Image 1 (cartoon, rainbow over the protein chains, first blue to last red):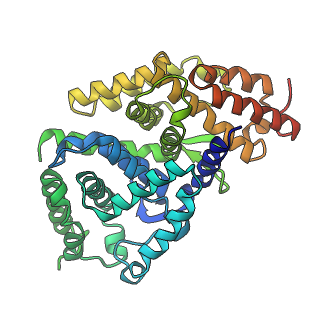
Image 2 (image 1 turned 90 degrees about the horizontal axis):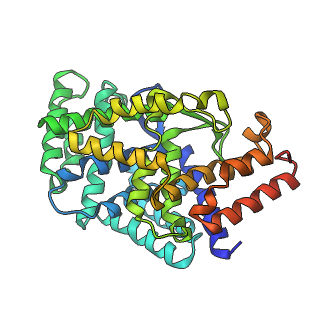
Image 3 (image 1 turned 180 degrees about the horizontal axis):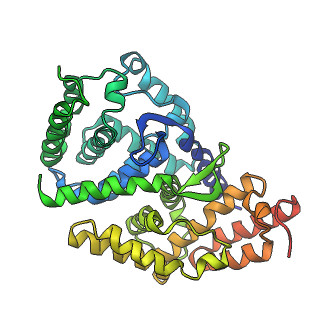
Length: 196
Length: 196
């Protein structure tokens, strides 16, 4: 077996760990928390289905690649809850270390490509990164709405916090941001999100 | 909200069910069975990482799309174990019905594209379908090898059955088929796969 293939297989075995990293969000059809691997799959499907709603032209393959790999660093760094301000102080440092170790398992050229894709996603400057990030924001909103408030109520998250965290979606997609604003208003009306 | 977006969101909520469809295969890093959503994510990552090992040129976006959607029909039809000959008799009929219902939730053009992609995957005739299918075969082999035999021992699967089921991988990738033959031989040597 070539050294490259051996390294690639070892990487693919290592990233199986993403299936064990739990998010705060619950799945919609079942009573358990979602893991990062199934979350990443769901986001890639959202990219396929919702691509026509992007404000600017996006390379959809790049968007999907970003979404498939965007949470790999959590294998070492763990999941940081969206509204956990303490956890966010050293989040990026922990994730940078994780990216070096994980992508570094791959043959050099592939390691660089994936590392750069992840950094591009994190920087949210390109059209692709902005659209991918918008989907990463949208998915837990849909889950919380379908799950009658779930983490909003559990962690006392208010409507202003949700709006502030998700406002940047407007750059990526007017349609999706309009949809999210309606979803937030409906959630307040239904008493599953506290107005503030 | 436009009717299209409403249909797309309903589809994205419905396919969350893929996270509840269990396969026989266990995850590598943890003591539970794998679900179809995380399996589909793992396959998409394998396509990204292993694409250079395809015998023929493949459109990698198409391969990834196929892998993301290939198991959606199991939301209605359930997972059929690879070595379950009884379950296989009506597998395709059940899956055709499921494809009509699920993809039919999407706007017409998108429904057709996804339905056709799924049919192309099932037919295993194009380069993309053959490569995607090879990865779908390879992944549980790696899992079983890492999990000391797992479903091979549990369901009395023999080496000839494994070879026959996976032989078609050779059309998609000589490199991966050579790797699999070594993996099978190692498994026999280690007593985690019965020779027959």
